[in-house]
Image (cartoon, rainbow, N blue to C red; front, side, top):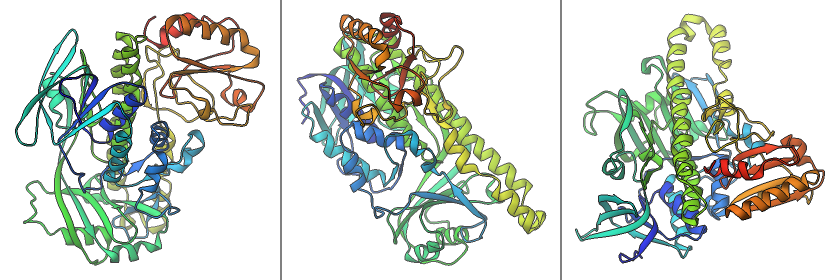
Amino acid sequence: MIDFDRVYDVVIVGGGPVGLGLAIDLGQRGHSVAVVEKHVTLHSIPKGQNLTQRTMEHFQAWGCEDAIRAARLVPKGYAIGGMTSYDNLLSGYHYDWLQRDLVAPYYNAANERLPQYQTESVLRARAAEIAGIDIAYGWEASGLAQDEGGATVSITGPGGEAAQMRARFAVGADGARSAMREMAGISQTRSEHDKLMVLLVFRSTGLHELLKRYPGKQFYCVLNRELQGYWLFFGRVDLGTTWFFHAPVPLGTTRENFDFKAYLEQAVGAEIDVAFDHVGFWELRIALADTYRQASVFIAGDACHSHPPYGGYGVNTGLEDARNLGWKLSAMLAGWGSEALLDSYTAERRPVFATTAEHFIERFIREDRDFLNAHSPGEDGEAAFCRAWDNRNEGSSEVMAFAPNYDGSPIVCGTEGAAPSALGSHEFRARAGHHLAPQVLGDGRGAFAHLGPGFTLFAHEDQAATADAFADAARAAGVPLRVVRSGDCPAFAGWQAGLVLVRPDHYVAWTGDATGAAAASILARVTGRA
């Protein structure tokens, strides 16, 4: 329960997955957090279902991975694959798509798929277990003021009652139409696609029966020339009955003037039984905040960036925002952070989303449009079209290339001239600015089992003197550092480095082999105090 007389470390407006994830991250670090969430009950729309391996590492760190996996509605053991079809689901022209298992060896957790309301339910339960987190359901932000000491958020309750909340920092995780972003005066850059989209949630056992011919698939993308690169998209909510579907519809479409059942059947390629649970609309656009920080106010998740739900990037990107921001706010609250460290949140996260939107959403819309305009079975002939269709390999290349990284960040000792990006590669080699790949240490345990809540330095036994220098420098600077020393083992060969410094969010900050490395200056750099 919120204590309105208390000054919290952080007030978070928005108690969806991103807001709750950030609250848990901060609460586990011992900080006081207030969460303001306008919805008392969970929504029933199954958005944000695909959770990547990286996202499941967050849930590991937040102590709720097992609960997330137990909350899935499709039975355990049923694969989480996707498929792209030409013209309609049953046309026979199809290929596997978004094969996230291709990158599984580079992460410490397997991916998962479940409706967002199930994820939120788990996160609400986990947050309730942490003593430092207070949540006010049914309240929303109505005002914001800042001064040198922090932020004051005015909130309005379900009965119209008014209150104020005081905190050192405030975070808006309140969605694409974020009130916190607007009140903080943070502008957006928007890319309009002039498309009205429909979201249908429906029940159909017949569709399940038809799609038994494609076992192990949970989501299905249909491309046809008429839609010019925009998708018809089906996803399972459970196994056998409930589905969601989103696709472009003509501008001006309403619930009353459009035959949604016929639209579904055209996309499927057969008649099916349909019972609608939800019909909703949204406008297709890409929006990106011009900064993620304004003094003591930050934004995260859809408040920073919004885009069509193509490829499952939305909730995963938002949860990575929370993981990036959490340790930086904690560092400032604990006294070892810096203003430059807080500024690095925008410097790292904003270009990652910008490249996600450009290279993994808008580029694929263009490429799908161009392919469909150039090829069809009638124009190419059956054999030639099949060769062109089968050679696209869109899914595997997309998954392998989507490797968000902070190389070139001001708080990473990385590649000169590089810049943070969603484009990258998956390697076991430890690279500054990139996610730490799992390796086995000399005690037989995986590296992730050794990671501490602060920085972690993995040191080969030949680097004992440098490891000691880092430990001394960290103590002097008040930076939390766990030094993990190990003998000759596969880890250092795989990482191709004898020293690997890992940040609290499990990204590599620095690697080296040189005895007597300048430990103090390196720590100053990665904490924004250079």
